[in-house]
Length: 109
Image (cartoon, one colour):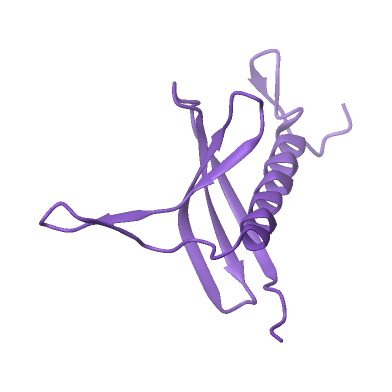
């Protein structure tokens, strides 16, 4: 019986929203020992978050999955970690800009 993976760190880099719903790129650190980068983060028409994993293209045109979750539980663990990080980034950015001017988030004004 194996223990479930633990995501020890998640990053999220917001991007300008694309027509196809791309909102950012994420990376995750598993058990402080494995880092997975370049996970594309999309919104669905229903407002949910969807993750797409990197693909490598060979010279002959064949495409290979670089990495991906093996089961639904692991995918959901990763998706929830990204959703939580997006919420954290959104909370931190609240108040960063006020009336078009940057202001310090930690200021008491």
